[in-house]
Image 1 (cartoon, helix red, strand yellow):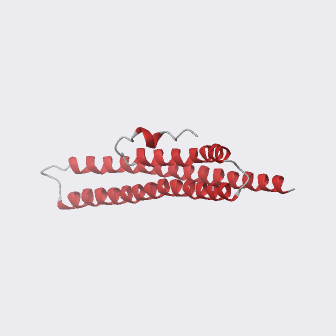
Image 2 (cartoon, rainbow, N blue to C red; image 1 turned 90 degrees about the horizontal axis):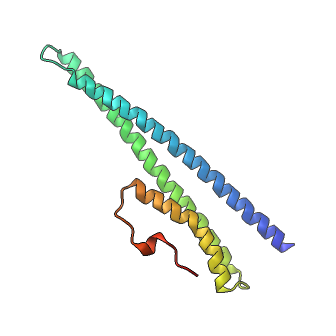
Image 3 (cartoon, helix red, strand yellow; image 1 turned 180 degrees about the vertical axis):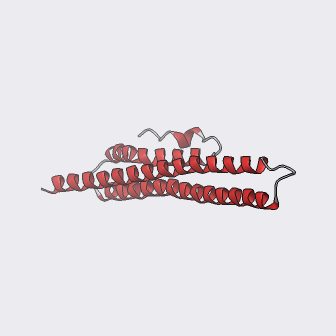
Length: 152
């Protein structure tokens, strides 16, 4: 009775983490789409600035400056939101992995080899999220030891 209950609990936990990640991924995609749109707005505002001529009025220059400032402010806000979402994804994966480690550590009947196999599989989403986060912030190349998990 205890094993099926434990298996069901693990399955529900994994399903909820999977759904949450999908939601975060969808929010990331939406924010990336907003950033693309805002980059286009910045481009239009820059064109407006570039179109100023010696015959342009102060009002024209002020309007172009305001349009550029608004576009840049929106872009900065979306950039910060995207960074927050990416960090949240990594944090969520890490929290789930810590819970998995605690479960494995509490099972005193498992051998070290069995625990290593379970944890190796559970670590993959954390490693993927870390890679995604590192790629998003243009980190230096990773050492080989950090990119591939150790063999049990």
